Length: 386
Ligand SMILES: Cc1ncc(COP(=O)(O)O)c(C=O)c1O
Image 1 (cartoon, rainbow, N blue to C red):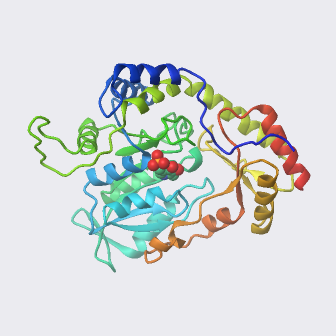
Image 2: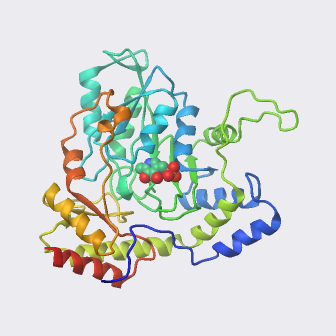
Image 3: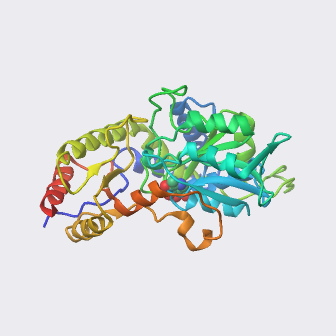
């Protein structure tokens, strides 16, 4: 039996230790300090955005965005059912109502189905979109770039403009993904919507241990989100607060890690690209499954996670068991959110594609320090399973 191959782990072989030690020695370890500003500036510059706000997690970032745009108990937020639960939880934190959508062949929220929902269930009058049955206002869409593949942002932004909706890109998994076609061609994931959120959790492309970043083309949006993330302090001397806020600011220690990770981003992306291509070529003729996407037009050239689409749920389960027993850590994709206990009472559009992907996908190891030998070992095992 070979050595253990994890699913997705941090890669900390650059200046991480040096920068964190420097932060410790400077005594600036909490939510103030030079590394936070520097990380925000460098991260923003990488995306070509003027402003960015570093926060404690992607989840916190999503919550801050919804709060900033005034999403509340009388509002509906459109979300994909195929996403990590954090996307939906952020809607719940604002006591708003999620409505769930299917995915397209890129695993991302089906933009066409949003129009179908609006046509069938909503009315648009006086600049507001209202769900006829509940009387609630459809306020926002949170498209998720699942595993770094990209949503159809052309269609989503068109709908948003037509019906006056806010769009918040959940780009937590999409750092480095670039749009390949349409009017946003050449733009990075997370630079298109009214605001976007990235995650630096331990399993993400770069990590700060835990952390997130909100970016927007509107500096006032980022400024207000930063204010909310720091307990909405209007006067730091006399503790004056004109709004209620959160303790969501990133720490200087996390930002120090982030700066070291950012220096290595291009190399990390290159490893992902190479490993994706290697998985695809080694598993090309394997009956156990196909690496997504199916050679269709790709929305981008990089993938955060590698999905093996197996022929059936039974095959998926058997393969999950086989690989995990053989020291290769693999997982199914997330259980669909509209079927999760806290969200069962909310409306969902039909979800045939998401159900199919959920039943048949196995996520393969994708760390940025995954070697070519590791990829070959995983594929050899998959071949043996067949
Ligand atoms: C799609 C998606 N949304 C939101 C999050 C939340 O990010 P975080 O773990 O930084 O809170 C994650 C990652 O964990 C994610 O994968």
